[in-house]
Length: 426
Image 1: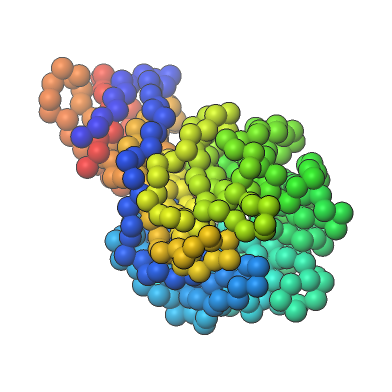
Image 2 (image 1 turned 90 degrees about the horizontal axis):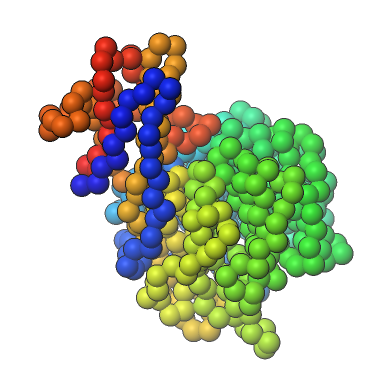
């Protein structure tokens, strides 16, 4: 068992955070080998949604949506028509799910963890990326320009009522590759490939009502991600460059990334934005592509380390999901890809780090609020009035999920005397 101990103080508590280190290897799940196109997970990484289907370099393959509610132990196909599900999103608790069908120009949503699905009231466009707020009430969908025979329209749409109604945001028409949202759905980042060939990064601080062109670069942009509070953002490009922002997209830093030769295709970050995961593929002069490789950063992109060898040759990663604590990765590998130098086995794989959640204590209305980032493994909160004693007891009650911070939270009355608290792995 692992413990984190915090002594009570009326002005706060002591806490410690440990940067995760890579586990030994990726673990194959029971997911079928198919043409995976996207994957997303709940804050704790236990509930997942994955979409199949691809349309890359002339490869046109349809697939289904699959869900798992037991941390990838079992998977079930959702009751949806075959499509190219190139982007999926999940609320923090895994109840609300969102999926973009690029093939048929539709957006689907589920409000019962994937048991039932319905198509949303959006126009037919080549929907390529979706995102939603942590509570699932605010959703976004972004489309590619002039694709799939839907005409030249390519917009970003938003729903403020869990997908019941949609309206075009203030974003200009463009070739939108990716959209990311803060936990409350107010701060957004989106990537666009301009008609001049420049990659443009746009940001919004009011749920898409107005947008600001943050910066342009000479490379195509592929993916964008942001922290729960929307303060930290990261964007990847085809030029092997990673761009990061620490102030909600107002200013950006160019980070060469771990390897200039890679096209950075998929990005993800922990709730606090400190842990980043990126997947890249390497281009060859002949136009082919090598297998993908995954890198991790535990300092918001300042430095990188390659993830352990996934044991797949090649590994055509088609999506990466990361838990709120940054300690669980779930990667989808497609079985059919024009990027591959040989046949890929396909499947969904997990990589679990050892979490050490930092426990925070703050006074509130004569009581105490204890909180910690939603962990990717089960932790329990315990208390003890005597640090020298061994009679730790569980704190009664079930922690609540703070959707704005993706933290588990417990509110307690102030104890009459000294009290110590700890998190213990179950």
